[in-house]
Amino acid sequence: MNDAHPYAAAVEGLLRDTAPYLSCDECFDRIDQYVEARAADPDHHDLRMEVHLAGCGACAEEAATLLELLAEPS
Amino acid sequence: MMIMNPGITSEVQHAVSSDEEWIADLHRPGAVGVAAQRRLHELLLRAARHQVARLRHQLPGIGAGELDDLAQEAANDALMSVLAKLDTFEGRSRFTTWVYKFGVLHAGVTVRRQAWRHREVHLPDTFTIVAQGATPAADAEAGELARELEKAIANDLTPHQRRITLALLIEHVPIDVLADRLGTSRNALYKTLHDARQRLRAALIRSGHLDATTSRSTR
Image (tube, rainbow over all chains, first blue to last red; front, top):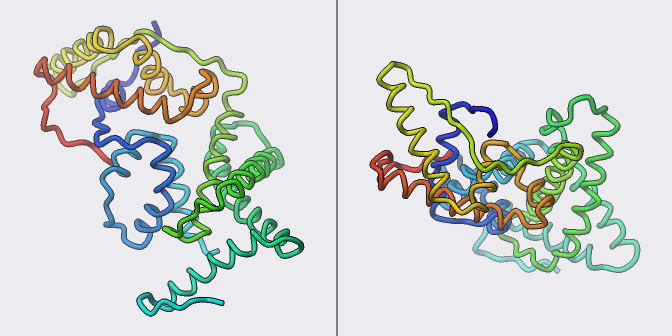
């Protein structure tokens, strides 16, 4: 058995509702379009993308980096 | 020749034209094609360097030169991916944004693989949640939820779901590192995690410890 873990983070991660389901591949297919829409309008919403990004740390990291890249002068 | 679409703005027309030029140049043989591939690599390197810089805390002690080597490696891998998938670009985003996502993906994978190259991956079967509440009453409530959650992990998940879920969420093994070690894909592991979360939620809703109408938490 491993060590005990911070309560809130563990419970939140385990019980996160990740429906409606979106796979990581589908997220990758749509992420460029999604970040452009978010960059243009911070109020833009895409439920399936938002749910996936909240439940998948790697995809969320990629979305955050892409948003930073779009905000930089090219 | 650029075909103008009267239904879209001149700014977008310019972007469409630029994207078409990118694709056309990358398909051209000879010096034009080579120059386009060089520009493509520069874009990918920009994205890869940005992601490596963001994730450098995962690689303590590594120097600037080694970090740039990782970015170069990721950009090279990403270039192969982009060229292989060039014909799948549909213009739903700007071409440069579409390219960036390959650089960012490969850089993240490269950094995480490097960070975990000497680390063992544990696939735990059980774990203990230490409940914390702000008051004695909240502490007791949290303790009860923790016990129910531990019970659901033990009884409602398959052994595979349990090990994957605990490795990803409790041991914090990166999903692509775990996929590499288990010879599977990020997609397959995320589906396993999604199914496990649904089972845990259903178990706690049945036992009255989770509200079925609890709104999902998004960032």
